[in-house]
Length: 238
Ligand SMILES: C[S@@+](CC[C@H](N)C(=O)[O-])C[C@H]1O[C@@H](n2cnc3c(N)ncnc32)[C@H](O)[C@@H]1O
Image 1 (cartoon, rainbow, N blue to C red):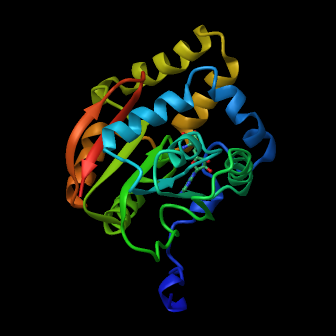
Image 2 (image 1 turned 30 degrees about the horizontal axis):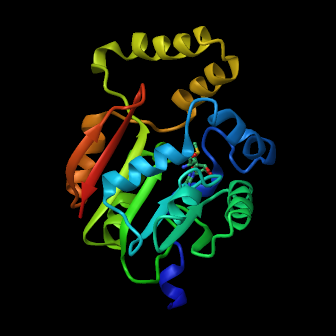
């Protein structure tokens, strides 16, 4: 690795500043799994992602924004190697503990992000990012996808799951109010507050913007899934 290649330009977006929810906060990280496992099944979700990507025991995968290892831990049992990347030391610490408790030795954890991770090894077979991409503003999403494209083998696949807006542009106020209200009605004040932070301080975007960015950075969108309310998952091939 040549040091000059890894020197960040002064104009680079500071992805470590945690726009929106502060996942570097140890209390946020500590409560994450308990909160998320109320509405997610990590094992089942990971199996579905691996199946959709066609990933098996001979394959290497990068997980961007890996968090506490929702995908990393189950996926590491099923593939050759996982690079687990996140900007939050607190989330990575929990991920590492789970990796060790599971006796896994094929996970490499790195404290870095979409814009700052340098993959100095051979290109990988798959890249996964779940509920993390909305932390980048749209211009930086383009840069991140271009970087991910370079980290993938030709024919490798990207699985991008995120909160994505699909409502007509002129209905944005009702759509966003409705989203917050639906969280309040579900009885979760914490989720409603997190939804407000998501809208105000994070960078979810429209499906037509994200799809244009994917295509312009060289990906072919093979599948688009909407299994989870308000979210989309894209399977793209390099
Ligand atoms: C909602 S959590 C999702 C975690 C995990 N992927 C999951 O499915 O549970 C978002 C994660 O993205 C990470 N994150 C935020 N901005 C990032 C960036 N620019 N690069 C990499 N990770 C980032 C946060 O630290 C946090 O762990």
